[in-house]
Image 1 (cartoon, rainbow, N blue to C red):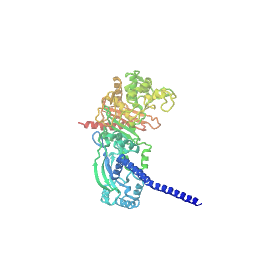
Image 2 (tube, one colour; image 1 turned 45 degrees about the vertical axis):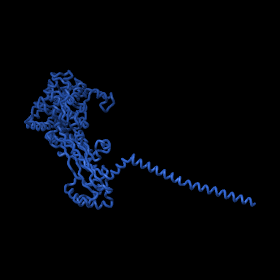
Image 3 (cartoon, rainbow, N blue to C red; image 1 turned 30 degrees about the vertical axis):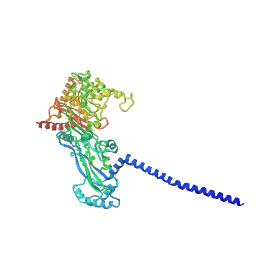
Length: 612
C-alpha cells in the first residue's frame, strides 16, 4: 500500500511537471505571435502608404488642391453678328445676378440673411425662399437668388457685402439682339448646353455653365463666335473664405462675324410681312448667292433664350404655340402655283418636244383623266407661245407642255434648278428639301402607301405642270432657281456669311445644263410678265426694269390660297432676286405678294443709287 501511494505521488509530480513545461512553452511563443501580428499590420500600413503616396499621390494632391483652391471661371464674350455694312445684329451684354453659396449659410442663419437681402435690394423674401428651395445651379456650388440686378442694387450690395456672408453678386455675359425679332430665323439663338452635350464638349473647353449656338448662324458659326474661357485661381480656407489670388487667366473673346444680310432690306421685308397671317421674303444676290434678307412670319424674339431664369409656362407658350413661330417659312415647302411655270417651260424646251418657237392653242379647260383642268380666265388665251403664256399665266398652255414632256423631264429640269435637295446654306439643317413628284415617286408609294398601289396618273402631271398638289418648294429654293434666270445660267449656293471665300468658284457655283435659247425664251417671258402682264404692278418710280412671275397656289393641306411673286432686276442681268410669299392669303400673287417684293426692291434700288 505504501508503494502504491508513493507511485501515485510520483505520477502526480510528473503530470505537474509536464503542465508546467507546456505553460512555459506557450508563454515563450507569445512574443513571436505578437511580433508577427505587428509586422503584418505594419506591412499593410506600409503597402497602403506606398499605394497612396506613390501610385495615387497625384490624385489625392489634386483633391486637396480642389478643397484649398477655387477656380472662378470667366466666360468669354461671344463674337458679334454684323450686317454687311457693319451694323450690330447681335452682341453681348453684362448682367448682374445675386447668388447664394449654400455651404456657407446654415438653415439657422438663412432667415436673417434672407431678410437683410430682401430689405437691402427690395426683393421678395418669399421669392428668395423659393429660389433657395430649388437647389444649386447646374454648376453645382451656388444658387441663383435674383437676376438682372440694377446698378443701384449692385452698389447697395457691395456697400454691405462684408456683412452678407454667403451671398455674392456676380456678372454674367448674355447674348443680346438689339432689334428683337428682326432676322430671328437667320440669326438663331443661344441656349445653355445640356448635360449630354457637356459630356461630349468638355474636352473642347466647354463649361457646364456654357451657352451654345442652338439655331441659325449662332449654331453654324459656333466655333468662330464662342471664344475661350478664362478664370481666376483663388486660395480658400476650410470655411470657403478667400485667402489670396494665385493667378489670373483672361478669357478670349470670340470673333465677330460679318453677315451678308442688309439691315435696311431686312427691316423693310419684315414690315412688308406685318399684315400677313404668315409668309416669307428672301432677297438674294443672284451672282454670288449672298442672302440680303431672310424674313419669316410668325417669328420670335431670340432675347427670350438669353434670360437666366425661364418658367416652364413661358417655354410652353413658345414651343407649343400652334402658329409655330420657330418654324422658318423661308425654308419650309409650299405649293408654288404659277411661279413654277418657268420650270415647266424649261422642261418642255430642254426635252426637245416643245422648242422655243412652239405655239399652242389654249382653251377654257382641258380634260386629263376624269377632270377638266381650267384656265384661270375661264376662256383661254387663243394661240400663244411661251412668252405670252408666262405673261398671261395661262394654265392650259402649260398643262399641254408638262403632260407632253412627261414627269421625268419636269423632274430633270427641277433638279437642275436646285429643287428636291438642300440649297447648301449654312443653316441647312433647318431646311426642307420639298417635293417634286414624278412616276418613280408615285410607284414607290408617294411616301405614305405601299409600293405599286399609287401609280402616276394624268391628273398628277397636269397638277405638277402648274405647281400644284405634287410639287412643294421653299421660298429659298425658288429664289435660287430664279437666280439661274437672272445670272445667265448659274446655280449658286445661298449663304449668310461670305467668310472671304470666292462664291463664284466651281465648287460653289455650277453651270446649269440649259440651251441658250431656252434661257433667252424664259427671260423674255418673265420680262413680259412685268412689262404688261400679271406682274405689271411692279412698275413705278424707283423700280428698275425687271422680270418676274406671279403665282396663286391652292393650299394642298386644305387652307386658303397662297400668294407668290418672284422677281429679279435689273433686266436682263439681275443683281437682286426677291421672292415674296404670303401664306394662306387668298386674292392672288399680284395683289398680295407683288407689293411686298416691290417695297424691298424700292429700298434696294435707292441704296444702289446712293452708292458711289
